[in-house]
Length: 496
Image (cartoon, rainbow, N blue to C red; front, top):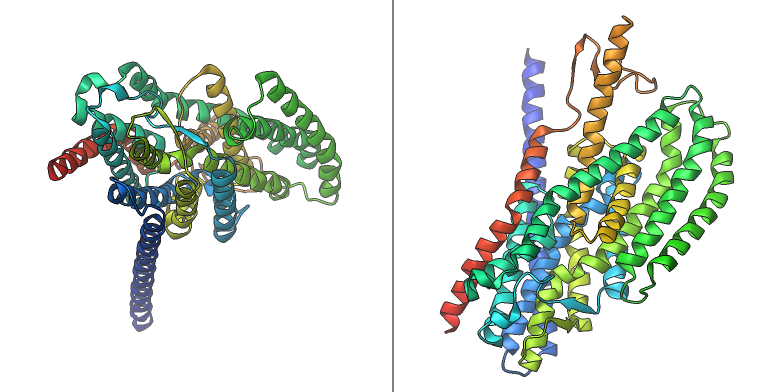
């Protein structure tokens, strides 16, 4: 009895120490984030020394840095979360790879021109003057950053693009009324809330079904892997080459569709020819177990995380610095332009902010996406990564506005719900032949069957996370819009 009491007391002390360490680390992260924003202030102040709106630009630069921190904390998790959850990458390795490739994508291939009206959300001609437009962009940037910060705090991966769109819409309405908004475009964006995750989930589930049917459930798993893994890796190479050209290298190279297709097919063939003998050699001596299969998918998965990060940095850095670039451009010219160039110093704030936010606050969302929604392994994480690339390509070809966040998280949900369906299907088959089901991770039996009662099975997707994330997606645009409208009214009140 004394020993049990002592064990309980020691457990409580351990929990208190763990909570204390978490609190200390949280304060350190906040302090370093504050230091980063101070550096942004000093950096921007050294560049913007004169001009009518110099103070506003410096304030906007700090807000842009704050937005970049939040994008790094929230959005980047989608690229590396599944790889971490599958144990293909450690948390430290994922942070380093993501930081390097996000920054490289932002600086080397980040768009040199950004649509300051965010894809035609509002009509710039409806703005009273350039001063009002600057206030709109500042309110949009600040509201988007606040909302992404709140979403990160509650552990919900949300679309930063939708947050900025909502911010621009809300501030635009506050400035010039509802007629300023292009509601056709907003309807298309609202449709993407459903299209993105559903498409990503279906594609990920299809590939997982293929891997299970043709590799995992085969009697000779290694022979099946030698036949199909080179093809799957080659498909990933072809898809990601097209993805990178279309989304990650558009600043420095804009080939036509035929050229992209030719490059993708050529890379597909080259990778298949290269990988086939490598897989055959690696498979020699491998045991006929699922654990052996996971090893074969690890390297392709790490490469996919790096490429997704590069493309994300190139494509989404504008969410952090687009409104800031609009403010800088409008202040310099005195005119409202639909498109403005992004100065290098603005791009640097975005790139460094992405990496800083990832290191300081990213692990929370990485764990959510990679570990807490559904259990990952390299095969499932591979399906998520491949689904992200394919879905973006299909959406781009069809002209559909999609969110990379919604696609990646939808793919994770798709993998999890497919596992539930497949487990139930196989459990029914087992019960129909009156064969007792036993949990054995190396067998071909369903993993979710309760060994005490075949009629019961555990849920393989956490419903609480599912509900929280879906709710956050639905309210992102309206919440960001309301925040932006309020911030715009405050700015205009105190500035007038």
